Length: 86
Image (tube, helix red, strand yellow):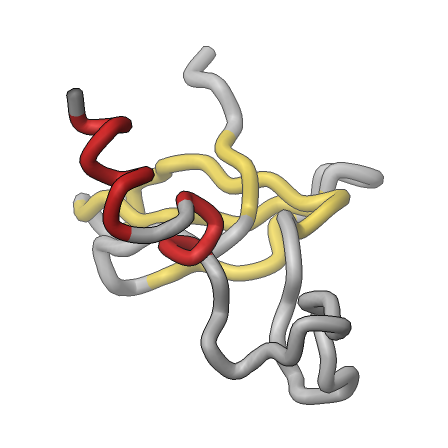
């Protein structure tokens, strides 16, 4: 029933179409160099550790296992995969 209502009022692709794109344009990841990441961070993992009795997220380099950074807030590092608990 919902599909019938959708097709009656407007085409299905119109719902997901970006109004700023022209008909012959495709979406892209431009502009380059705007200092943002697309996708996951590779060669790094994060794990939950304890620092001075409080839990914190620690980022580790996957190549040699060295610790890179510790996050003071309770939030995780964005885009960095998590290590499984041992």
